[in-house]
Length: 140
Image (cartoon, rainbow, N blue to C red; front, side, top):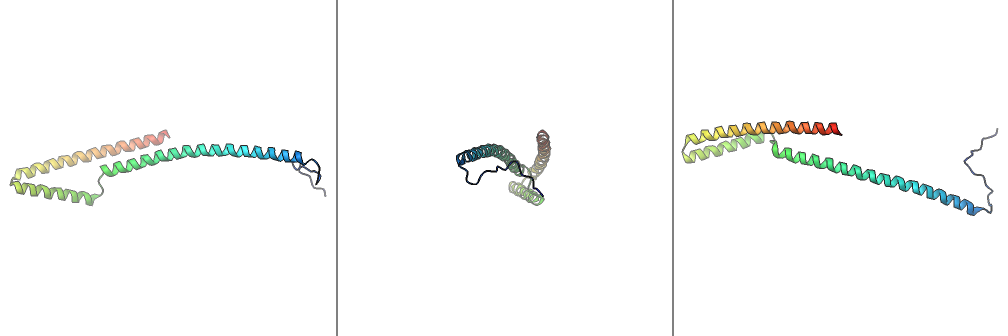
């Protein structure tokens, strides 16, 4: 029953007089590993910097899109109805104060045209934004 000896293990005498050579070998090995670690560390730092920049750009695009969408799109149906009712009440009050029924119908037609224009513009902008996002995903 003989066990095979690993060739990478150095067998030396326990207290040989050549410890300076062993010390130099160990120092060279330590420098080699230190250089390898520094090279890996610098690679990690550059990768982290690149990924950080990309994350900031993506975060900025998401935040900008969120702000723009909140500014353009209506909040919800209840808020839209409340705003429309408030506008109608204001128009009625103005018409009542002036005593002109024609002014009320002009405001109603103008508000309807303006509402239709806003609806079309928001729908068009939404489609354009979807296309831009889809194209951006294809590029990446």
